[in-house]
Length: 213
Image (cartoon, rainbow, N blue to C red; front, side, top):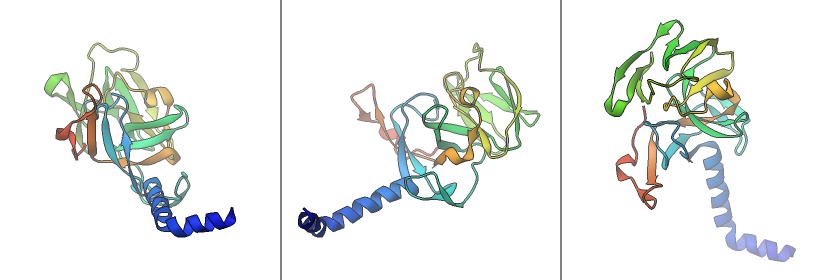
């Protein structure tokens, strides 16, 4: 048995080393992430695969959340991926509140640190939401209730408030609470490719390498 293992290693070690390095690269440096739901519409849609920079925030031991070196903290407006212990799954949301921020929502309109954000009507009933750092598109339902409102909350140290762009169809910090920094996996700034789940998984070429805001 031992001789067979040695023989197998000699014959396939280049391929085995390549696979090990590839998995380590995908675990700690860069990968892609499927978008399974519409919680980030219209920015992301079902079938998108987004590029994931796993070194955006930390240099980590591969296959773990153990940080060897902090590179940067998540910034307001970024689209980030995190492994939520509360939701028991990986989620893709937008960073809305950073530590120390006070956030409130009235009729789906955000108030950050006492200042109401500006909203401008866009196409198809969507809206442009103007964060202090950037403007991005969101999907709002003017008739929505329930999670369209919450009283001011202050984001604690080491945590973040995350929301989906599809504000009335997103299980985000309004349900799972503040997200610990240790749960962040990485940041996304582009769609790598996209497949149409409702049309025989045909590629949506117009979304390939589409930058995200």
